[in-house]
Length: 364
Image (cartoon, rainbow, N blue to C red):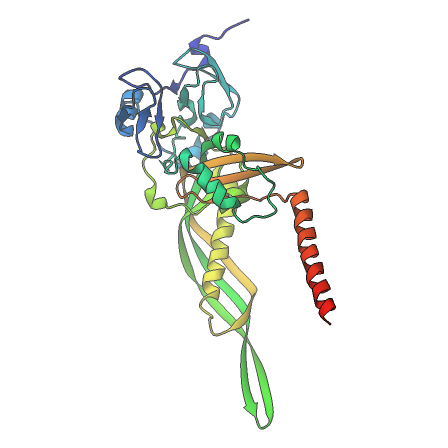
């Protein structure tokens, strides 16, 4: 078998090792530091980052620079990396930013994913620990009488994977006008009659509305509706990006660029603008949009990584995916319905109604 040399492989990855005992370090959502599971030592993220990178800095994402160098920095092909802990070759796709070695289970941060001006502008580190997963999942399924028994097994919860998902945060200003058809109703007595009067209006609203940090998922493999539902995030907690935050988690580089994502951001901003204009007509009812002329001005974008726990389940031949906000603990996803429990519930209710009817009839 032909083995590639390190130069051919392009060995640009980071392995965070405990200075005291040499064990792989992982970022702790509880302490906010890199921790060693073997000796218990804790290290500041910034200190270990500086030591690992050796003073080498990377330029953060710029929309203009990205578009200018599009051909050079969008290689999404399969890549091979060398694990610095055991020497194994690790096969990844071009979008993988953090993974673990399948042979020694060491955490690996792949720096190539951040070269060429692709370093995120910021990151929200995980705050929810895996120890809290069971209580979050239990609360999510609580009271769901038709949920299949043992759908969320302990093993499945223990295997839950934390992922840093790439997001675009768009800023911009929506300018323009909206025309609403509206009604105003008045009720009054006129002699012995009760009169209801409806007047019809056309309302014009125009102006500008500024938006900051409108999030759009930048990973094609992630379900957009799921990623939008798992928010909101507190973007005040965005911190400077450091690869050390990725240790112990998976992370992806974006594979849907800002030009492909801005349409969704514009939709969200325009919908919010219409709702804001609508809210200025509180004295009217049955507001309907009769026409609108809204446009997005001066859009800009930041590239950030946001923490998400992903749970994948299968039931009745269908795949179910759940997302848990790694900052707030909010859980979203569609729950299946157990046919057996549905039938049992129906017949239980039907039987109870039958007994009640039989009792009532016997009393008549």
